[in-house]
Structures are given as C-alpha cells and as structure tokens.
Amino acid sequence: MNVGAGAARARTALARLVGSDEAPRTRDALVLGLVALALRGIVVAYAAERFPPADDGTFYDAVAARIARGLGYTWAWPDGAVTYAAHYPVGYPAMLAAGYALFGARPVVAMALNAFIGACGTVATHALAARHANRRGAVAAALLVAVEPALVLYTPALMTEAVAGELVLIAAASATSTRATALVRTLVVGLVMGVATLVRPQLLLVTPALGALLAWRRPALVASGRGALAVTLLAVATCLPWTLRNCERIQTCAFVSANGGWNLFIGASPLGEGGWAPLERIGVPTECRTVFGEGEKDRCFGRAALRAISANVPAWLALVPKKLGVTFDYGTAAAHYLSASNPELVGANAKIALGASELSGQRVLLVIATLGLGLAAGARARSRRALAVLGVGSALAPFGWVAWLAIVLQGALFGRELGRLPVVLLAVALISTTAAMHAVFFGAGRYALVCLPALAALAALWFPRGPAPATRD
Image (tube, rainbow, N blue to C red):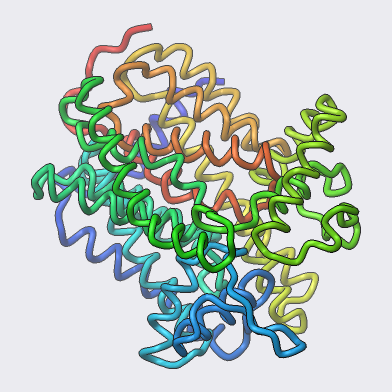
C-alpha cells in the first residue's frame, strides 16, 4: 500500500476544498461554530417533542428536575420515601437543572444545552488545531467535529458522553491559548476539568495531560509536571465539596458517584460478553441483598466483584478484547438511544441506517487520524507509518478497536516531541484512559464518543504550520 501517495492526493483535494492557506482566523471558528449549532439545532427542532428521555437519560432528567425545584440530588421511591443519592455523577444533571430552572423542565432544554456545548466544542477544536496547523488544518479539524454524524445525532440524548468530550476540548484549547496569562489558563483549565470530572469522573485521569499542555510551547519535565499538578489539584478541589456532601448524606465519601462497585461487578461477569448486562440476569450477590444504603451497597458489590475476579483472573482478562470491541467497534450510540426513546419512529430499519452513518463517520475519522499520525514529520516516522497501515486496515475491518490502540502507539512514538503536539497528546491521553477504564469495567459504544472530538482534531496533522522539521527514524 502506497500510503504516502494516496494521502498526498487526499490532502490536495482537501486543500482545494478548504481554500487559501492563510493564518487561522476568528471568523473561521465562528462560522464553523454556527454550522455545528445549526446542524444540531435542526436535530433538536425535530426531536424536541418526539424523543423523551431514555436509558440513563431518564434518571438524569428526573434528578435535574428535582435539583431545579430545590430538592437537591435526591430520589423519590415508589413507596413515597425520599433518599439522598449519588449513584450517577452529579455534573450533567446539575447543568440541566440550571436550564430547567430558567426555561422549564422539558427535554428540549437539555437538547438545546447539548447543541450549544457541541458548538463550543467545535470552536475549541479549531483553536486547538490552529496551534499546530495552518488555516486549512484548523478548518478541517473543526469541520469534522461540526458534521460528525454520531455527535450530531446524539444531540437529543440526555447523556454525558458527547458533552464530556467537548468539555475536554474546551479545556485543551484554553490550556494552549496564546491570549491569556499562565495563571488565568491554569485556573480556567482546572475549573473546566473539575466540571468535566463531575460530569464523567474518569476524566480526572486525563487532567494531568491537560495541565501539561500549559507548557506546550516550551515543554520541559519541570514545567509540564508543574502544570499537570496544579490543574489536577484545582480539578480535585472543584469536586471536593461534592465529595464532602457524599460523606455526610450517603455515609460514603464517594469522590463523585457511587457506582464503581456496581460497574466492576457487571464487568466481571462473562454474561455481558464485554458489555453491560442487567443485574436480574447476573444475580445480586447474596451478601448484598439485604444492604440498602447506596454507598454501602456499592462497596458490597465492589467486594463481590474483586472476589469473582480473583477466583478466575485469566477468564476476566480474556474479556478485555471483548470490552474494547464493544466500546470501539460499533459506533451506534445515537441509533440505540433514539430507538429506545421512540421505537415506533426509529424502528429496526431506521436504527440500522442511523447506526451505519455513525459507524461510517467514526471509521472515516480513524483513517484520517492514523494517516495524519503516520505522515507527520518527527521522530520514528517509519514506525508510525507502519502502524498507520495497521490502523487503516483495522479501521476498514470489524476489529476497529485495534486502530484506536494503534493511534495511541503512534502518538507515543513521538517521544519527547509529544509535548509540542497538543492535538496528539490529547488524543493519546483520552483514548488510552478510555480503553484502560473500560477494559477494567465494561464497554459500550457510547463511551467512544468522549474521544471523537479529539480524534477529529488529529486532522490538523495533515496541514502543519510552517516548515516541517526533519524526519528521522
């Protein structure tokens, strides 16, 4: 396969489409943000009265409505009892609650918020890509986020994944900004990542990489480490009041949410085949059946999970490829959600068609990303190109998860140069932590959505700004 020649032709075609090679401009970012908002707005207008909350979105909607009414993160049970809760992360329902308090507790309010954050994520992608790319590269990266089928179609979903991925892009763009002082950038990134962690707790694992980006123009171990530590501490401090609330209200000092034990127990079961399976099918551990406190019940499930894993470690490890496949191979999160929300409107055929568009969009992003990493000048170019061949082949095959891991390896091959490539460092951090997290717990196609904006940002590598450094291997 002549990767270089084929990619060069594709690069030329894209350059003609985007236009002249000028410095990235604010107008480009605003136009692309409006394109993203318009596309998502069309979807919201159609979905507003047709798609009620479904799956976990039912819970987020109910909790957001209670918070908006001043009832806090509590749950009303069928018997009339009301208890404090923290099973799901508080960040997203708290965001929805602000909108519900202002405009009424209606799903369309949540959808509009999703659309707005998606548009902000598009603008942030343009800003981040512009750190490395010329105008064409910045436009190409942001355009991919604006029109990516999965991100657009997921807008009506009252779910966290797309919002979380876009918050990370906003943080990365803020970290690499050239218009703010180091102190301001540190505070903004720490706060945004604190909010992102409240939305999706595992994003705390990505936070040190966002902090390291503060020193991307002159990366050094001390400067990058200082930024990583400062931003991580700020993010933790943002979450700490909620942790203290959990200590008091649910008698468990859960950092953000109290569902880690449940999820580990579900992921340890072979019945899910790498994905989620209902507890009714797996069976509640005997010792947990009479435990009713939310925090203590989660700990009970966690102990049962560790016992099951230690009893047969090889079988648990054998589930890892299946978990990665469930997470990265299918790309049909929006189709699943919309079908669950309104099965009459999104029946079997429509679900297949929507899922096919989502999957195709993700696989196109994979090809663009892995080729960009292979063609980029820098350390170990020959090895990165070999991995690009593997990645493209995997992206065109059923086992697409191999292509995702190939991107992590390609990024790691830059070595010390990785600190100067914000789009690459971000993608490596997000994909690797997502893969590691769901290899331990369980996979689902919607979890890959968190990585899609960062994956699209790698299109910037096709159009590096200024003369390329000498390639070496």
